Image (tube, rainbow, N blue to C red; front, side, top):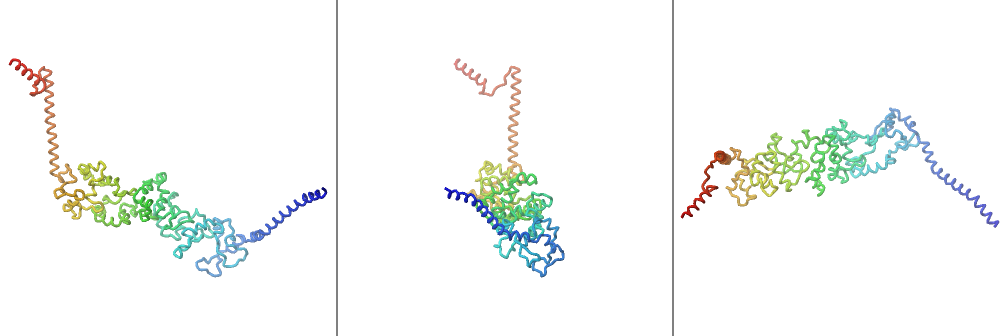
Length: 495
């Protein structure tokens, strides 16, 4: 028992002392490990020490370095206004002693900004995949050195250092001009190309400007009704219209990278409003813009009567968008488009449309049936020529063949049928005009004569009833017939 008591006393006394010893030993080890860093931090030269030399505007390198400024002057005032105003020089330049060795080790921004460095290396600016074709962009190229600027404060002037032409085009665009007027909602480089450090090549399928992604990029602004209202943008749902068009479906459903996207028609950096004569979507330039993809159709259109009139300066002559619209372009094989194209032609050819509506073709098409002759079936579409042109589908020499496209047994007499009869046009249809006039006056004469006749007869009946006399009725009708019947019965009885 006495031995057990001594053992418990030793354990209660020594155990806490042993624990305190271990804690102290561990704390001493940590201090020993951190002591070099603490000593380094304490020994690092301060900004004031560095500026004691580099604050001299005449300080230069002892030996020039290709591509680098020879001046080693650091403007303290500029540095104090930078994003790194509170950062010591030694934190970036890794200088531990003064005076320091030369050359100084390169600055590694990624030691603090590792996320940005990773994104930059994955993007087009920091990627080494471009090889020597595109120089790798250093952090200082955009953010500066001692005048380090924050990312959100970087303007297009920074982009212009490398992309001078693109930025020059942007400054002339509707977006650039709006920005210069103080519109903070107008698109900038970052709006279309993405976040600054992770900008990707337009050939990268992850890029905001990759053809499959570009409509969505533009839709960030151009599918916002409120933004459209604030900036008087005429079409607020342009993205929805485009996606439902033949171009949008080819892009989203078939994945055709060659199909038209926003930049195909509007351009990219030099986007101008349609009212600007230099705009790709100005009415004067639209055939050429569409012809960028539809070259064959453009050649045919130029030879047509529409194309020639337009080239002569007649701005009312039909161009691509008058028939196909702008963003909601449909496939010409769709029934809806076939049914509507006749009305589209009638916006210019109102008299011809009215005459067409009076024909069998017109009345059937008005009911919604598309398997009946429409304008393009007889006149063509992009190759419409005047009737006097020997190549025209409605030239007298070609008309029978045109009719035979639907009417296989059509002959020369059949082809004489006028598809646009106008009874009101004496010069175009003299026989029809006089026939219509004759029928009109004939109807007026018949209804007029019998109208007067019935009126006079009614007056006579009224006068007869007031004088208790009845006008004689026509033989075989009414009371006269009854009277004659009675007379015949009386003769039979007498007989």
